Amino acid sequence: MKDNGFAGGGRLAEEGKDRQDASTKRITRKGGTRPRPGRGQLSLVEHALCPLDTAVSLNEGFVHEVEYLYADGNRHTKSAKVKILCPSGLSPSDEFYLWGLLALTFQQPEPSGDFYATPHYVLKELDCLEAGSERTKGGKNYRDFRQSLARLSEVTYKNERFYDPIRGEHRDVSFGFLKYSLPIDANSARAWRIVWDVQFFEFCKVTGGYLLFDLDTYRELDFASRRLFLTLKKIFHRCSISPIYEIRHICINVLGFAPGMELKHHKAKLARCAEKLAEREIIELPEAGVKGLFEKKGVGSYTIQFRRGRYFEKPQAMRAPAPAAESAMYEPLRAIGFEDAAIARIVAKYGPELIQTWTDITLAAKEKHGVGFFKRSPQAYFMDNIEKASQGTRTPPDWWHEYRKEEDRRERESKRQVLGLPVSDGAAKDEKDENQAFEEYLRGEAREAVQAIVEQTVKEFQGLGLPAGEIARRAAEQARRQMQTRFRREHPEYEQVSGPKPLADILKGLIPKGPPCDSSPSPLSSPLGKAKKA
Image (cartoon, rainbow, N blue to C red; front, side):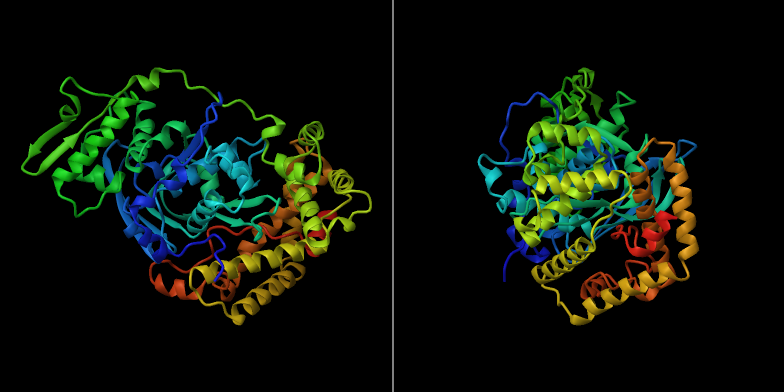
């Protein structure tokens, strides 16, 4: 069977923990002066997302349960329970891509829940390319990245006392991280689409919900030290001394060491993490050295406390806005045939979403129909369409919607095959039935609701000074996204058709029934097109 870049949990687990750091440490330093930022979510850095041992975490149907401490409104210390459902397993290396992708998303001129970029752009920005791998789009770096996306896309995160930075209170939450749509062909010049879970994206966007850190420093550390670095980075932002941690709690719940390990081994591993942070002046050691950090409280009971180091006294350089040559859309526009000067003008004139849509349509036409499809050239086709789309007189062609649907179907089948899950004709039929039912729903009982959402959204966007065509397109997409969530809530018979049923059976009883945390926006269709014009 052909390997399309996904790896089953069992096969990955067999490769063992010696492999776990390969994808994020096999890099080529380029001597650039611009620091690379990472962006973490404040509550998620409080605890381990999975064990450090990949022989445990990289297994199908893996469920990670962990606890962490927090202060309530009265400054009393409380504990919160977290459950992380990982249908295809999870690796500590996946956290690097999660935090890196978040940072790249929010460094775009107009960050949104849809992030479009080629894998080469992402790996280049994260400094994860080996020398010469720029020309090897199907190489190991790309495959590792694709496998990480596959695992992250299936995660469901549940926290009974998650701090909601939007509402300013602790709440019981459940959400995912991301979904994606990728070209099957490894040599395709089209951008990959990363769709962030709506709720997770909001938590990472709002002030008080995210943590910025130096990604280069983070990457230089081993996995356990990375987690300790982020935990202390959050604390040292406001305090010079950390809370007092019980050794087993910080080793198991925060860093992800095995709970069955003897206390002396926990202490030794934690001491090595502290030494690595001290080498970079992230923490300051007492006169007695690392041993002086530990305090015995009783038989088999030790605590540890950290003091802020000089690392945090250094000015934190901010990453300058990326020039057009480093835009996420640079490579797709270059593949169409534009030179740097033209790309700079396009990026400056048109909104990111318009550029994303019409670069993908142009490159899809080139792949599907060949260069003979264009009357003049791909560049002329792109410019004519994006200009008219910006004026509200051009919408994406029907063939492109169908092409994307077919790509999504092939991607799901490819993933099921590599994960060893059955692919049935019934699943494809059910999906077709859902799409048809949703279109009928938009044209019928939901027609007035769609119209109301579009009108309200148009009013909200008009104050932003966007072109009329851009406002209409965004309003239509938002209406469709909201109605798709409502449709699945009102028609639960369709809620399970998009996932592999055998894996759902594995997790039966762990994931409560209900609408998905995130519904990716589908392409615009005729009902919304009519509502948009109205």
